[in-house]
Image (cartoon, rainbow over all chains, first blue to last red; front, side, top):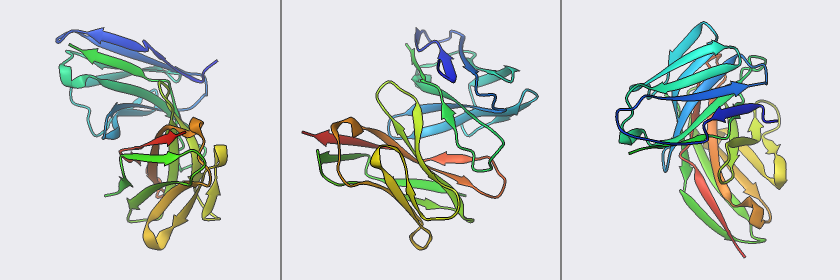
Length: 114
Length: 114
């Protein structure tokens, strides 16, 4: 079984709809992240969480919100989706054992906003 | 501020030829350096990392990279390309001053010709 899972894997929605992307992990890591990937731009950090009570904005948090429901679960919401939020979204985890922050990624969610 | 530059958004090599993917970083302090690989329809997975010690780092699938502080580079190489190496490769940097932040390059897509 995969250590980091994301649901759904693909989603097509319409402008203005509320969307939630979910991430679960079995690695026991405290740190979790949401990234979006766009061609030519690499990965950009949306939000990150160091533990259940800790939520931090990344470089592109506008239009997004997150919830850390448990150590193993971190969800990303688009309150009112817009077409430029069409992208590939990745969840990742890392532990606190090492300061170098090696990250473990889920398989991604491909979101299309029409 | 730190940044990561990957030279060439696309690199094409023939099967059996040398693979060289370039990565330069800017950081005010010595960083931790990573290469991740993304195969089609998958998340990123760690290829190799430099944290401390030997500057020539060996990773999976025959890849290696050398940390050159004087050149602020961490280029990825493989002596002989295989068709299965076709993927997108991301260089990433984490500062080692206790901050969590990891910055990803824009990615280089590697094509391998038969």
